[in-house]
Image 1: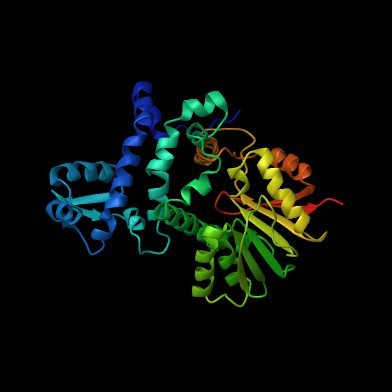
Image 2: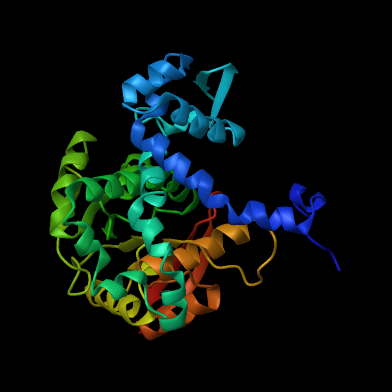
Length: 349
């Protein structure tokens, strides 16, 4: 029986491996601080001494240096000379103005909302409820909308990641037979914009909450797609726009438990013609958990859904069951190069 290769840390004593795993939050906290202080943007023109960085960020120089050296140790920054710091190829993506920037994503996953929710992991495991239930909150997305700066960063983080997904989905799934696509829960439209750019014959609708949709309209217009793409506000728990050839939902269903996920899909089913397609863009939970980056990513995302949204990652058989419960038949799963798949379904007769 084949075994997985062990990570480099396996040569260390078990106690040290566990210590390294247990102190992972040291790095995420340091990374969040560097993101909020804008350190990468300050280094975009080359190395700078710690005194300059401290003055620019209104921080204590010796303390900031200690934090930046922690991030040097994991490859985010470099220290080319004592007390001076520079960007690495990895750290370049912590800048806010570069294509493919991960700045908003880092602020999201390392920021207080996610980190504090993970602090309630025991509550989640004992009750089966997400952390926000402990505070009497019903919908975390509605709650986040009350904080405009946080909501804007969430939109940007999702859009930044989604642009990569759009390239993968547009290149992998065959959109040629389709003429119209509605992106349900499409945020500011990054996925649909990418698909429409790659497939000029398509028309589209971005559908999301009213507090999000004005930003979607602005982004659609900015990308020159106002004549081919419409932005519509509403709740996918009530209804979705009717008549598209395909209904696309990227990382929407994994935010919700089976009951709410089924409700969303049932509303899509009511809006669809018999020939239409349902296309979920999500990761598929592995059939067998192993020691690998792919499995770690799937499992970590699954627990994050438990903690932060009340949703879950689903394996192929769970998607099949969910589709059947909502009136669909799962027809195929089309993998992409970035660990997400297009899970295709059609309405059952």
